[in-house]
Every structure is written in C-alpha cells, then in structure tokens.
Length: 86
Image 1: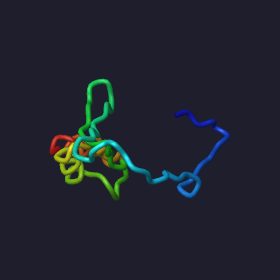
Image 2 (image 1 turned 135 degrees about the vertical axis):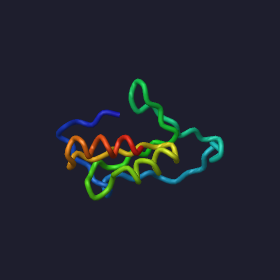
Image 3 (image 1 turned 90 degrees about the vertical axis):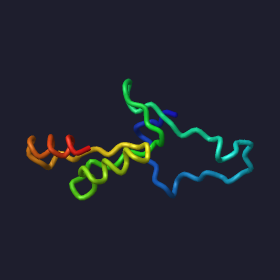
Image 4 (image 1 turned 180 degrees about the horizontal axis):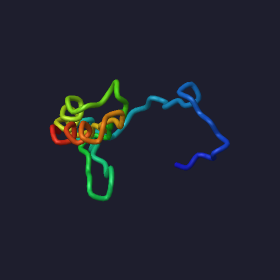
C-alpha cells in the first residue's frame, strides 16, 4: 500500500474492523523477508535506541525469531562488542 506524502495518519485515523476469518491462528505464517539475505520468523524489530536495544534484547529478539538493532550511541569498539555478544 502506498500512501501519498501529503497524507499523515495516526492510530486514531485507522481502524481494522473485526470480522470472522477462515485462517486458523495456528496455521498463520508470520515469517517475512527483512533483507535480501535475512528472513525473520516473526515481523518484529526492536528500536535502535540506546534506552532500548543492546546485546541482551537483541539476543532475546533473535531467540524468538525477530531482530534487535544495536543502537549507534556507542563507540565503534563498544558497538562491535555488543554485536559479537549477539
């Protein structure tokens, strides 16, 4: 879906109407292609914020099938150390 740059929407502007579905929840597939070489089992990616994601959360996200993005507010060597821990 493409949205015009002139259109700005918030959560209050969008409504998903509940309805019956023929898809059984256990048969729903959530995997998605994140990049050309990375496939995620669940479509969840953490925020790359210093108060949110370091190695601990990135590991937990990966274990559940998502991805944690290490934030950039670190020195290059500290960033590399965080990535190595993951």
